Length: 146
Image 1 (cartoon, one colour):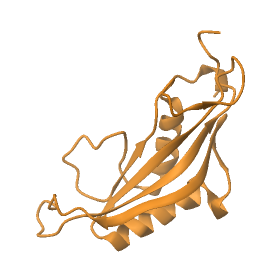
Image 2 (image 1 turned 90 degrees about the vertical axis):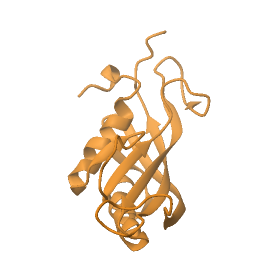
Image 3 (image 1 turned 135 degrees about the horizontal axis):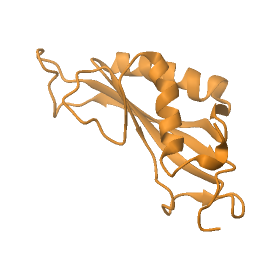
């Protein structure tokens, strides 16, 4: 895969692809529902959003925040899921290469809680969820406007 052929959504798609190795359904931006836990949601800015920081000239290198939401049957399950994600996206909390020109680094754990607004189908339980923030860095992606 050549880094100069990425489109605006490819960095998130690259993250989705590596996370699918965990065996959970993985969605970009939103769960299309209905999906029973466990599953993961990858959310991040698109090309040109104001929270992206250009790193260099016309190659369109960027750094932006990306969030991974792990939805499981319990908060403990969400913690385990997030730990498995961390082992792939930022082992030893260092920068990881997800694909050529796409890198991730753990920033912080946002929350682990129970979503009491939803009940898991076939149970009388609300799902646990957790959200971690990562830095999503792209290098060498060609800028079509250059």
